[in-house]
Length: 217
Image (cartoon, rainbow, N blue to C red; front, side):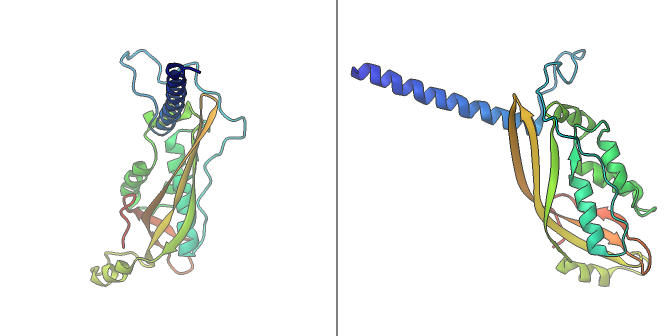
């Protein structure tokens, strides 16, 4: 093969490989972020040619475990917070509700804001649903933060409810969806703190959540 033809052949192979890598990168970005908003306000958020998703049964919100054990309760809260499936008919509000169902009455409004910070917005949920996106959490450790004892000692009388506790969760979230018939999977490590109150002889209630990746140390 003449030298000039060899060079053209090598260039063609390299360009083809780069094109494939670029397409896969775009697919991952689309799965995580969703397509950009259309400039035409009348254009639907999800096109009729949305990618075909897996026929497996969609997940649904599961109630948080009713227990007086703080660690078991925190583990259940963490899973309820991160385990969601956009293929389910309900939107993010339905997944948030299972957490608000176990909220302390006084902290419920602030907790609702905390939960919204973890779940996709309604607009992003619609975009993610076009890819059949679902997410789950693998909990790797649950520990009482070292600073919690200091915070508890410095709290004024009545500032913390009876049985108040803080538990820091570390784990990995796994997200999967379908882009152009290609199954795309992403994962990321994370950490956050759950604040609960477990009165003796009563089920635990959820107080607040720290910001994601800003746990109490």
